[in-house]
Image 1 (cartoon, each protein chain N blue to C red):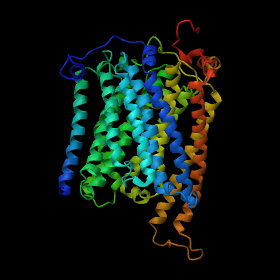
Image 2: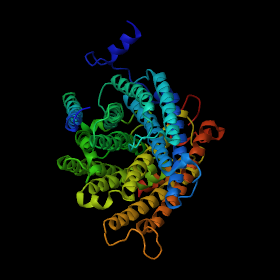
Image 3: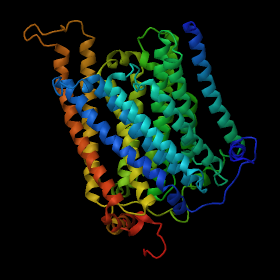
Image 4: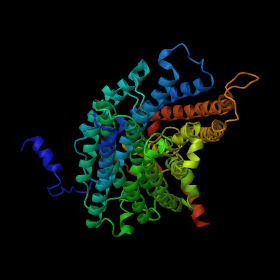
Length: 498
Length: 76
């Protein structure tokens, strides 16, 4: 049989599942080393690039003259470069690294077609680089979350399909037995993202739909990228790392399964709440609001489960770099999701829409929940992949404190400032410009909050640099091997002592 | 190319397919026995190399100290 036919016969659902022999975790870690290292390194580099654009965009909001002579760094371009570098550069590479590694470990089978991941990862990063350069040089689109020029879409879609096929193949060749909830989340996300991306690209750029249908497609995509791509991958990491590190199973496995299926069945409809007040049918918006409020069910279920698993283990959580970040992420997931459901109500949305409150909410979900969870995942994963320990505990502490205080400060600034901004925008008694000074009233009231956001951005940048230095020292520095002791690295190579 | 309501129907068709795919996966999962014996299912994350009952992550170089503190707090 030709290799191509053999490949398709293996993925054909009609054929009997090929069940592999159970493989040791250390062997899987070793086999996943090259692709995971490629994705993690790329993710961290994109994190630094995205952070630099974030700082520039943030400063420009309260000091518009900052870097005002560079046309490629106008606010619109810097902000879009930040979003795309973070979403497709940092977040997706982190998902590919952590998500696929967790999937491989849970499948407990030999890694096949590992080269496919390396090829796909290389093309993915080339595609994102071209896309971000396209944004900076003025080729950006006006579609939120899809600002990269449409010509990079085929390359990204191709790379992604290779990665998703690899994930599905891994699942197919898994050890026979129970499918853990993290596998469900990862499998679902791998299946949903290409669907979302291809449909959105087709209906907005390739064969553009007319009128407001483009906006509906845009927000169906934009919101589902968060809810059906980053969220399941983040939750998969939490459901894997939390019991692993604590050494005890999840509090209620039943609830975790219920949480997955309610997300899979209902989340898809929620995105339309971004268009409340827009010129689209009211019943469509109402359906979006109902779906958004229904999301309280998986959120409550997940929150109870995370809380009850960690409760009574505060010291264990504090002693583990992984769990410090993961628990921070899990708590933020609960809070951000409740805020999301609340913001979808018409009476609330009339205040928060078009304000910094929404920007704060986006950072709540993507940073305080997703990014913090991925940091935790990377802290757990990389020592096992490299058989090395993190070189500096202090750099981990600097990372944790800077980013947690930084994001906390940013969330307060944007939520409070945004709420005040919304109330003022809705108040017809507030003049557009102040009669005394001539300044734009609402914007000048918002300025201190925007300034606080820039300060919080500096803190977050320090945290990211500490993370980068620790990672690089770990990969290239001899000191990283020094701490090969204790339970952090349970799996020892032969002859290496305890 | 089409009227806007045709596009809306297309979007709904895809929304429906999304929903149907999730329902199909749930049906497979029930038929395959995945929704039974949750107690055992929750323990598949543990293996001989990373067994249940052992903490597997500490700050580098601080495992011994942290382990001692954890044991002390468990005794209390």
